[in-house]
Image 1 (cartoon, rainbow, N blue to C red):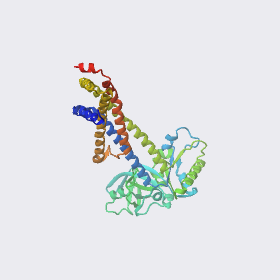
Image 2 (image 1 turned 135 degrees about the horizontal axis):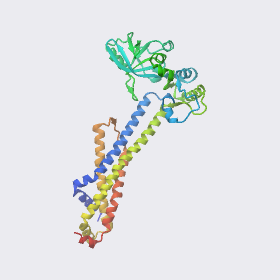
Image 3 (image 1 turned 180 degrees about the vertical axis):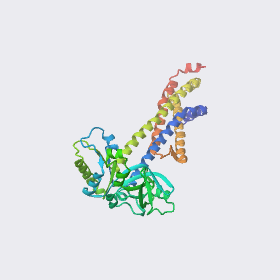
Image 4 (image 1 turned 90 degrees about the horizontal axis):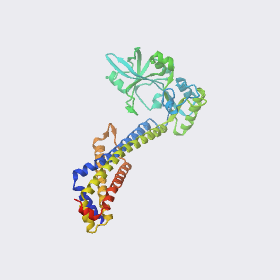
Amino acid sequence: MSTWQTLQTAWEGVAANKMRSFLTVLGVVIGVAAVILMVGVSKATEAAIAETINSLGSDLIIVSSARFGPAMGMRGGAAGGSRAGLTYDDAVAISQEVRGIAGVAPEQIMPEQTVRYSNTTITTLLVGATADYPIVRDVAVGEGRFLTEQDVQRTSKVAVLGYAVAEELFPQGDAIGQSITVGASNVRLLVVGVMAKKGTVAETDYDNRIYAPITLVFQKFTPSMMAAMIGNSLRSLYVKAESQETMESAIAQITSLLNKRHNIVDEPDFLVQTQDDIIQTRQATSSAFRSLLAWVGSVSLLVGGIGIMNIMLVSVTERTREIGIRQAIGARPGDIRRQFLLEALTLSLGGGLIGLAAAYAIARYAGTLGGMRVLIVPDSVVLAFGAASAVGIFFGFYPANRAAQMDPIEALRYE
């Protein structure tokens, strides 16, 4: 029997029981669709993270405190330094002593601050900042001015409103020169500027916040118990290098300076990262997550393969007389084995095609999956189809071999 004739016979065997064949391949359909979609979601998320991080600037250096930030978790054990973490004084020292940088932007963030003007009250984020903040964090002032060095040194009671905050408090656009009341202590701040619209970048909503001198935030908005505990400690500060060429030098100087200031003799109590470091970390995390999802999808393929083997064993039993007749008219064991193996392969590849169509339909018409964008990755399609083919061959071989080894006489006697 030629290969084409074998394929036709195998297809007739599959088509003879359409519903049973469909239910048999359902596991393969789900497995292929799951592998393609999960890998697509992971890739799309990874690409979105890289885009947003890159939009912040490739020459940004992030210095995180081990006291608050991820450095503690990443570095684990005890440190040989003071464990005091970053402070505002560290930021001042970096701005004065490190060469090859365009600015330093320490942040002190106070969430859930009540802001009132006239009869309007909103809750927003208060960010203690310095004059370099717009340069370092790549934000622009839309109206008025940003905070100055004098504002920070004099602890001036001034504020710059985020775009959305200004729209909400001053819909007529007359925010400059007005006074707002902020926080539980009702601190009155003079509005000196409104930021240009920035939107959300890397889960940070730059429009829904207000900025005040960082010294004022330490003094007026840090709860007394927390102030006594943390002083002027910072969770992180941002440094902008003058160029890509000065990045390595700036990182070395910052590390050396902080080691010296914190009396570090063993493990540092801070972590210095660049945008590339963060992207690589996120990509490594996404890659591990993607592998996990692919394995979860593979479980469905495995279940689908077991279903195929089960139904092929049933089919071999049901068609015992047919096998005996084929052997009686000259079919060799290899022909019988090839026929049933192709039937199993047809089932698995058919399930793979349906799963691929389902994945494309979801990616194209749904657009997102669980709120996340889906990106079809060619490698995942090849992987899913390869796995489906392997499933068909692996789980179809035993039933096919069993059919090929049947005794023709016993097969013809089978009722």
